[in-house]
Image (cartoon, rainbow, N blue to C red; front, top):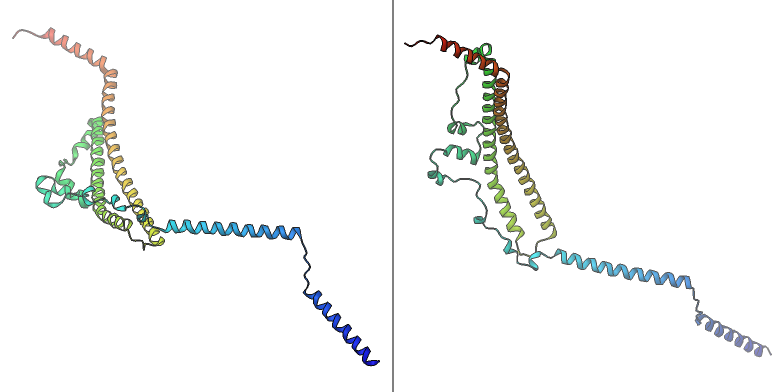
Length: 273
């Protein structure tokens, strides 16, 4: 009897374990619409990011390629014959017989103005004659002083402009060499040029551009100085003309009457020799 009970109990245990194992292997499907929608949105966003990154990589790869890979840059090359010369060379001095020193000043600068003095007409230095005119003819003294001031301003402007032009020309040759070196680097067809090298070339071009703008401003300042002196000379001439007109209107009638009265007396007193 006990043996039969043991067999039944063992069979029950085996059936229970078998049924439990089947339940363990069985999968129950659970559907959550919100979770499914969230997973789909995340997958779509990841796919969009992947496509965007791929496009950016392609664009950067194209941007990293040199322009020489698509076009021949040698057509942009400018030879030395196409650029203007910055100065007159010494072997050309046989063409200029009297202004060689001043041409040299225009090529290298002349801070003291010695080259300009060699080609300019000498000025007589005023002495006591101006002080004597202060009491006798103050208007004449003022006019002479104004003319002397115009000459001083003109000399100063010409000397400064000559020196400035010479220095800019002298520095222009170095600038031309820098531009030629930059041109050779920019037209280099090698594909080994990195993006950093291209950026350095852009920086060098910007620096040369800034220097050229500075030189242009200096040239313009010299032109403005010359225009100011010309305007002063024209203004002084117009002021002298206007002063003569005003003096004629102010004293013309009295001067004419005095002249006529004097002529009348001379005619009355005249006798045949």
